[in-house]
Length: 624
Image (cartoon, rainbow, N blue to C red; front, side, top):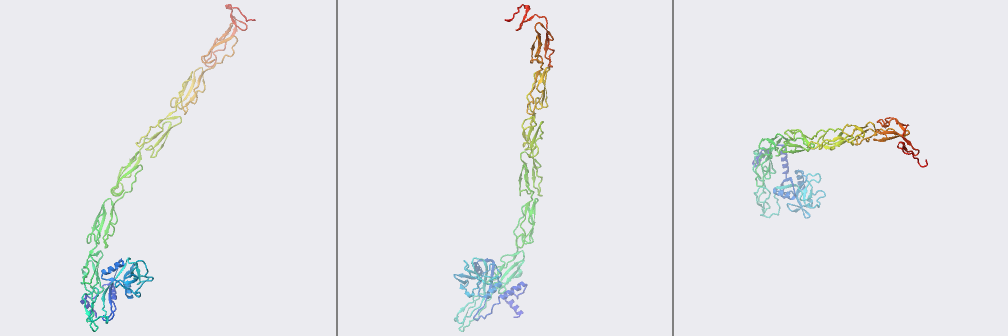
């Protein structure tokens, strides 16, 4: 027919002649026309021609039994490979799937059968890949390699529980065969196309061997024409494998960005001439509601509906907090927000450490050392705080006061005692808590008190500063007949004292006059004695002279007195008495005796004095 006739026929049978809107639609139609380019056949001949429609699914991949069930749910059967032409057709039609596709062939016993007819697949019809089939455990189902680099279009047996793509087929038209001589007169045949008009025409064979009626044609069921302009924010795209809005026609709603179908996005014209569902509308996509963050604020601008496609929400934080994340979120067409919801985090101050010799106690309402944290500092015993006790993390992320220090308590300054010195160990500073001092005295001095003292936690020394006292020597007394004169640089008879002994007139020092008190507390020398001055002893007296001495201090020493007398008949020539002076000399020279009248008579040996005046007779010893 010409163009006008073609248009009239289309308007009568359908809606209008097709109009190509873009290259994609043109390519799609050309593909469908190629699929419908089936061999022509005289319905009254011995052969027949069939028309098929194929469908596939790779999302998701299925096990073999699940694939079979899916096909049946869609009024179809798993594809059975009948000839090489069909294999080529399927390889061109189907997209590449890494898992490949199941087909309706499986193993029973030792044979491979067509699942739909339960008939054995002839060996000449089998199309195995190299080294297939193998005898793997459970590999009783068959897949076909589609668009594979090697062994494309070939079969492989695999485990039925593996997941692969699904291929289904549906009979669109089936010609009636005229089996010559096989149908008796009066036989009735019923066309049995699947999903075609149900107005079946019964016919029978005449005795002449012809049918009583022409072979009927099966026309696809028609569904109501859809209004393409009724969809807001989207458009309706239909695929018509047979004719527009007819059996197995599918129409898919493609919504604009940010919209989604309200219901099924695809409807199909079923075998009853009805669409499987109402035409869905496009509704704006919504993101999940979001709440403003803790300690923050949120302000949203909704172009369409609340929290829907295109909505923009802006976030801010309260004083003392900062935003973690993007400050603006947008609801995307994927029904997801452009970024995760931000959070408000308390501003952090720098980490505080306990001061040396102190401790830190903090309360943290949010996070450690963050806005609002409050810290109190205390010092150990013996230490005092130098600074402010409390500090707080402010809204700008800084502490309200500087960190104080713990300083050791100080004791009073020590001075070395007279004649001594001290050495200190100061772990925390001079004369402060923990300082330990040891006092030592100079040579010749001894400690009066405790040698060690320590600065306590109260800031007091544990002991008073000791004194250094000079070493004491034994007390000295003046020597007899003498006197003692001492100098005392420190104390009486102590280290450094010097004493000098002197004797009275007529006496001399026996020893060293000077002595000194040493550092050991002993005198350098013993105290000397005062001895009386010695006068020369009378060793040989003149003749007829005798003496009688008194010695109060020693023989012939100072103070000794001697009386001289002469024998009778002699007279004393000199001093009768002499005394030993303080200079060690006798007061005068030794006297002598001179002859003179005397009343005494000295008898011959042995001499005896007789006083003749007493009239004593002179008597001589016998023999004289």
